[in-house]
Length: 373
Image (cartoon, rainbow, N blue to C red):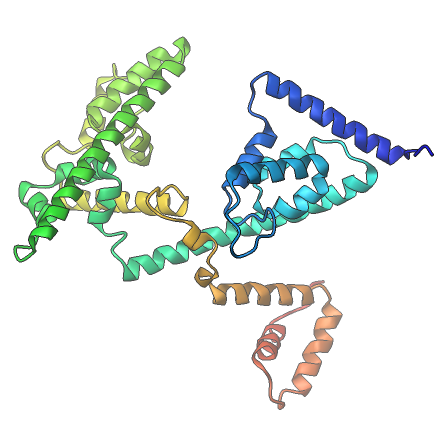
């Protein structure tokens, strides 16, 4: 008995075949497919669920993870999003936006994509708030953001903003080891200093490589401008890393080096190599601390394990969340003036009754409301 296919089934099969064909073509051309990036991301996700396992079962290999994800993607985009959607990023969702689906599949896909994007938006907010709370706690209870530890993580930036303006005595005080320290402590300090020196050298090489790459990619059209700005930057900041110069907004000079008044004014803004005032030192130190805090909040601190914070609800600001929920509750009441008046009257009549905290907040809020005409 022959089996007939309805229009939706035919359309779905056609779309899947077109998707497979386009995948083969792109892969043959040697381009990195959007699906490959997406699968790579899932394989690296420790919390993604691939299959059920018993306690004594061996861990799933990366190859098995990849195979499971690829097979499910080819089988059904709906099932794929239902299982792995919470682990995808916005950049991965454009692949599903570009596909053609049957009417039933399209409804489900759009619903899932909307839900994923909503969670991603909330996720970004939660991560930002959690990192900020973690930063505040570490400032109060750890030495992670002490000057010395930040110097160890970013020795080149530290040298340009703080280190090169320190006196020999200040350097000895900073790098010194307690006279009563054991030999092991002295040895560890020396190892740490060697590590910082090596890291600083690597950062210098990376900066030079980035500068050369940017310079060669700029093209002939702006070679003269790049050369002119390069001369100014070298005169003003002979050792400042390229990637950090944008933080020195007040020192940037855009005019031509051939203009003596501008050049002279720029020089006056920059302190001499071996001397700056105490106020200028404080400003540069604040600049360094601000950059390090910003790098941490933006996820650029390579020494920190962000998984310990980003997925940790202990860093949620409960008071702030409660306030947000309370605001949403009251905003819903603002939609109807008559409803507000009735509720206010009821609250006044029962003012002698014992109120719980949410109701008390509500009464206070309602007494301050006026109807919009």
